Length: 254
Image (cartoon, rainbow, N blue to C red; front, top):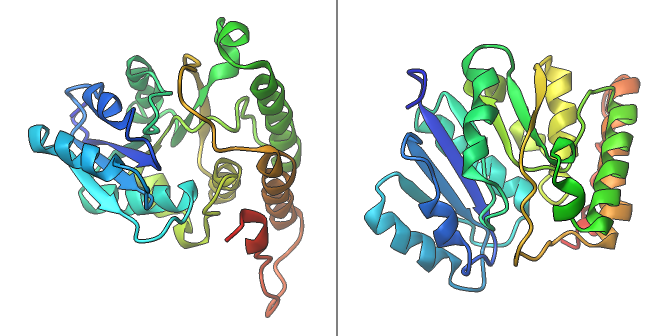
């Protein structure tokens, strides 16, 4: 509980058996609920999370029968946290890449009523050039610029997954339509803007250690730009009755 509001953190995880327990142990004591979504891991991620739940009653483990993507994991987590009565729902990945010390700053604009959705901005941190691998830094800056231009939103680090949202803003989103794979941050930003939500950047520490990124060139050069372009078309073109929405499942390899 913080500022008399129920705080939940959802933790999407896929094959994070090495890091999931330390991620969960690092959660601040004032977090009321921790929802772990195991996206059909093939390692011991679920078992490690279940072990952690034995000593921490805040942890709820949800498991996907099939691997569906990080966006799908977020949808499952958002629904579970909302049904549990959370007022504010944050996202912290299961790979230890997000510093729990940054969580209060991420929540404050929402708790104070100044924002509906906050997004971590690693690019504004003084250590970003030292901490973030050069290829990722260039890629993040490029995709963030593309997101701002195409969607008309003032978001500096579009690919950062360290976020928080109010339950009221979440209720206005078409969660069923959210992109389920890599590229979900861009689609979520677009849908938040479409709903009239107030977005705010919050500087967070870039953390890079032994985790392995699942985003490859196919995602960075193909899938994510496609998601941004699709959102841009929704923004500039009126919906056409009876026309099917684009659904390039092949881009995600599903």
